[in-house]
Amino acid sequence: MLRALITGGAGFIGSSLAGALLLSKKNYHVTVLDNLSRGHLNNISKWLGSPRFEFVQADLLDYSTSDPSDQKASPLQKIVNNSDIIFHLAANPDVAIGTVDTHIDFQQNVQATYDLLEAIRKSQRFPDSENVIGEHSLKKKRVIFASSSTVYGKANKRPTPESYSPLYPISLYGSTKLACEAIISGYCHMFDIYGIVARLANIIGPRNIHGVIYDFITKLSVHPDFLDILGNGQQNKSYLYIDDCVNALILLSELMQRNSESIIEAQRDVKKQQRIPTVKSSAGEIGNLNDKNSDLNQYDVFNIGSDDTITVMQIARIVIDQLSLKNENVKTEFKNSLKDGRGWKGDIPDFWLDCSKLKGIGWKPKYSSRDAVLRTCKEYIKSGGARKR
Ligand SMILES: NC(=O)c1ccc[n+]([C@@H]2O[C@H](COP(=O)([O-])OP(=O)(O)OC[C@H]3O[C@@H](n4cnc5c(N)ncnc54)[C@H](O)[C@@H]3O)[C@@H](O)[C@H]2O)c1
Image 1 (cartoon, helix red, strand yellow):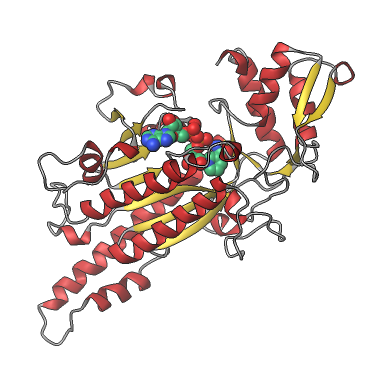
Image 2 (cartoon, protein in one colour):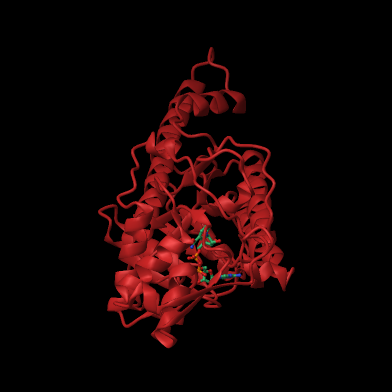
């Protein structure tokens, strides 16, 4: 059985991921750790009571690190000790909030990520009972981090590949996501952790309770003849449907799993060879084997987004149409526009990610940006409208 921990797993992406892991043939046990600051118990309630599911209501920030062998080790440490793969999704997902509260991104992104990484680092030394070959040092933790397209800032290349530089984020959200990426890279290389950074486009789907579609449906449900739009409506971005995002995260996790299994196999071979005096043993050799047997690097970065983009005005038209309203009867007003047409500071009006690296390992999005918007809209409306959620 594979034990997955999802931080922020009661939120939009995390709960969808939890559901997909539980349905997968791979026999996952899923632990969700969430403080419910933004997530909802409703999102995970149907798995409560299942022997393959555990919910821990806790705040990552409550756990300064503790000695993992200590009987009183923090709950976070105990869960991490028992996890094979950690999907780190807990964060503040709101870019605009950084303009009024400069503290939140540093706490929820940087500090929380550091606390989690410390627990992972300490767990590497903790002998757990499920160690397949009885030598803990060979079993390494794997972490997948939900980063964001905002780390690219106003990139002048679109679609933007993972190799794009320089990375100059223009929001506290983006800059703290980038800081988390850097800290994860450091931990991976210093402490033999496997890490993948997933730079996500706008992810949409019915459980999402923020973002443009949710906002438009909520507003139009109250005032069907009036829609205020943040910015000039020409913002042109990539929107990925939640199922495509979850599939990508699971694919990356399984690739990491296969990768680390082949490394353990290779390390076993080295161990056998160590009994032969002519074979030198050193961490370096294991490192080389590691490289030769890897499809992935110890730390790797992947974009996850759709193949195309859609403008805010096009989204507004889809929403109006899906609510059975008439375009000509809805007065639109552009509000809070900055001089350059953006709706708020930190917003990146145009972005599109180059996902060929992920496609190279077999992933393909099922939905275009337009289809993703349409599908999300229909699902919101079917479930009684965003306003009632
Ligand atoms: N939704 C998107 O379009 C998008 C795009 C790019 C990146 N991301 C990233 O993906 C991740 C998930 O986003 P989402 O849209 O599902 O957001 P969400 O708000 O629905 O989920 C985040 C969850 O984390 C929990 N949480 C926050 N701080 C916590 C803490 N200190 N301890 C424990 N739990 C905590 C919240 O209660 C919430 O359930 C976030 O890291 C976000 O930055 C999302």
